[in-house]
View (spheres, rainbow, N blue to C red):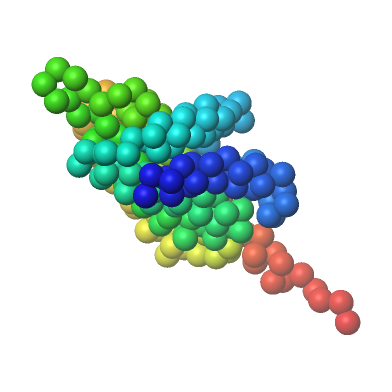
Length: 227
């Protein structure tokens, strides 16, 4: 298992490089530009993948040197093996623009990495796990959490366009986003106001995108066909 974790840690930057060269299809940046959302970070922010992948490799190398692993590290190895594999998989699926599948895969990746980060961050007595466990896994899980929200917004806009402004799909999406807005607006948690504003902005953007897509679809249907 320890060498599998290392191999999967090395595979992520390789897959990331291939997906961003355009060899596998449109790059992540090109896809994000096609379906802009208010929760996609600026391009420079995605440079964090470099340190994340580097630290993941450090984690892979360090854990591979631990032959007599305790129960906690064994559980972390299983979770990271699955999380790393799913991270590579969702980069490939996202390039293919299979957004529903990408969303499901990244949820699984986040669940595994959050579990591993939680295990690595637990204290025993007054000691936390070694830095090479909690630092890489916590950083990776934190960034995937943001990517998940961005991908969810991208999925909504992409499907609204593909469904040509389908009013019932739009209604369900807007209804859900308004529900998120209402819930977060009433929450006392730090950052809840920002989450509420993002949800409202997304609801408006989805509704406007659906309206424009529907109008363009009607105009295309009315246009005379040659011949």
